[in-house]
Image (tube, rainbow, N blue to C red; front, side, top):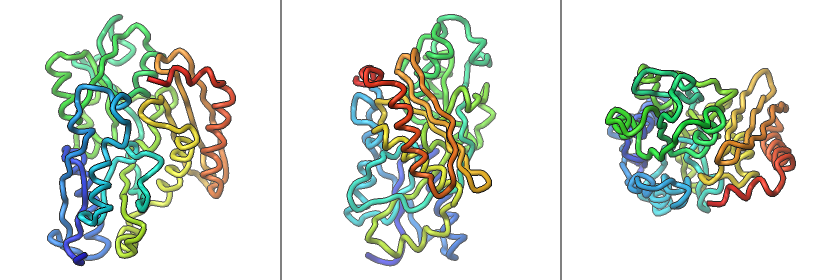
Length: 310
């Protein structure tokens, strides 16, 4: 493997490219590299190509990473840049998350064609979303709405909205901020009543365990607070065996040597919800996530999860 260029793998959406360029800029700043030292390689993923069905029906989160991870394992790529919320908890053998960048805003936003807030939509209004978590939370807050599947990147979904395919949609504020599009949001949703997906707002770098050189290069990019928060959220997800078939929300917040954690599980129709607010020392981050998951599993009971099977 040649020393240069360092090849970064990414999806081809505008947001994915913005995130990959952020990683390149941080590598350049940390190590004095030039742009020509780092190439950004666009990889088409199954998740980008399949637009007509929910991810839960065609393979889950791995559809956004599989082809990129193949490039890492085959040595065609040196590192990959992902949205952390797209990452499965079980990675292919030989790969790991080598860094989490400082986290952006974790909240979701509602965007409507009319400028109305979520609570002000008329009965029967149509809202588009591909996320089971967002759908379940919407059904819990507004069971009178009609929900439809909205797949595609940010620009695709906004185009569908403007074309009249729905009255409103939901997106992550982090992505809008990164693309300087926050002004498209009609309403920023409260993260207590509408908690985010595990990992939302955080960019991660994935690389090969065997590549010590890449590990050394990305180490200065990793943000300790984000890494700590994601340890809690991903352990919570792992204990629940979370995938795109499961409506799960999680948010960990490090503060003064402690980690505060809000975990939630819902049935897809939003009719049942269990949540917990817990706290632990930073050193117990993984234990906190797993223990909270087990607590909610015990409260919900085995019959709760029958509705999670598509």
